Length: 128
Image (cartoon, one colour):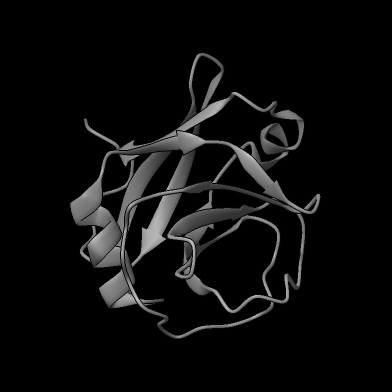
């Protein structure tokens, strides 16, 4: 395991009862949004899809748009402020919605392709 970093926080994205996926939230991408999300952890919500390339869950996190973009690469994590949603990019995508980049999925991205309605995402800080 790597040493702790102020700018990079290791987070676990768990699909309840199925798999745990390591993710990194990166403060330098969007310091205010990442800080707000970190203070709100743990977060939990039902899996939804935006098209075939984006899995997401809605949260109660309230953060405006910061360093926004419309183009994302496979493995990117973004925050959609209009819905308070944390989005996980399964493939490269241009969703047509402005989102705030917040991090990267570090492993098992393809596990997000076959989730079912009723599956639950849990998003929490990794503890030693």
